[in-house]
Amino acid sequence: MLISLFAPALLCAAALPQEEIVLVDGRILSVERITSETYNEVTYKTATGSGRKDADQVRELKHAYGSRLLSAYSDGRDLMVDEQYVVAIKAFNEVLDDKRVMSNKRYAWVKGDTLFRQIRCMFTLGDFEGVVKFVDRLLVEVPDTFYYAGALMYKAEALELKGDEAGARDTFKQMSADVAAKGLPARWEKESELGLLLLDKAKSGAGLRNTLEDLVALTEESFPTVASRATAAIGLSFIEEEDYSRAQEFFESIVNSDGADDRTEASAFFGLGLCSYRQGLDMTDQDSAGETYFEANLNFLRVVTMYRDNVSLVPKSMYYSSLCFNRSGGSANRRKAISIAGRLLKRYPTSQWTAKVKRDLNLR
Image 1 (cartoon, rainbow, N blue to C red):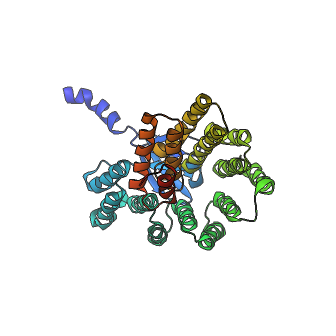
Image 2 (cartoon, rainbow, N blue to C red):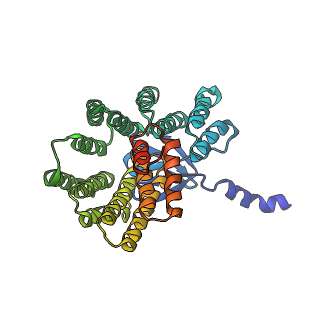
Image 3 (spheres, one colour):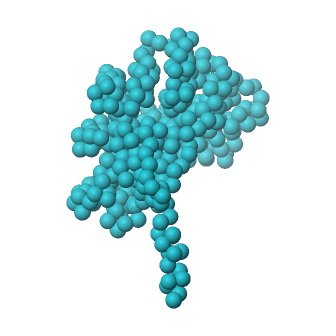
């Protein structure tokens, strides 16, 4: 009798949404199950039916992974949170080697997701050769992967960071060509255009900003993530000209909007930190400078804690954070500066920012 009374409630509980689709505008769709995902679209099932979203409107997919079959996958995710990226890669290798998972249609999403997480781990470790290799592997083994364009973005940045700008340009050109050849969403043609523009060393100052502003005007309604990234680049160009107030306006417009992806948000917070830090350097009053360094440090530490896999900005943010503490004066702040520098040395031993912090803080 009791079972029959509680049966409807149990059935309702079982049907509660288990997975989430995070859209680029910040909205979250709670669904029973994400049924398919490609670089063109994401389909899903709800309690009342089914639906779809264009892939370029989706920022993140959150699958349920409580099954015992996915224990290694769950371990890998936990290890990423704990910043144990080398061990995480090994855990994800176990997932890829598990035929029970790879052959299960219910878990068709796992292979692409796992390879993409390995790419993120390698990127964070500064293993740029590994990033390039695994991006190529992902696109071969899961050719319609939801992460197709995102993986190419990682590849382009990895190539740029290891000094292969020609390779980075070729990667952006491949992305643009795939819009026509493979039906990749049109957003990525604009991302490619922006990437190539930022690699063009012949453009700078007002000329660069004019081109970026034209791109923002073309994309702010249809492709807000592209517009936000171009806006961040405009802000950085003002920093180069020491116009910190103008730069702050552009960065604040990004952090106060919902149109930016994680990389662009990190760039905006870093830009705000750099503006405050540079302003602090220009101040003659130590108390005022200390307050400005504190404000700068909040933004640098936001990047370090909230965007940990952004290997192009996290080491740089840790470097500037240590300088903020050091310039604030006092033995306690000096200890904090050394602590941040120690984390930088441990996590990024080969980074140029590690060498700089050792020199600038007079560390052995």
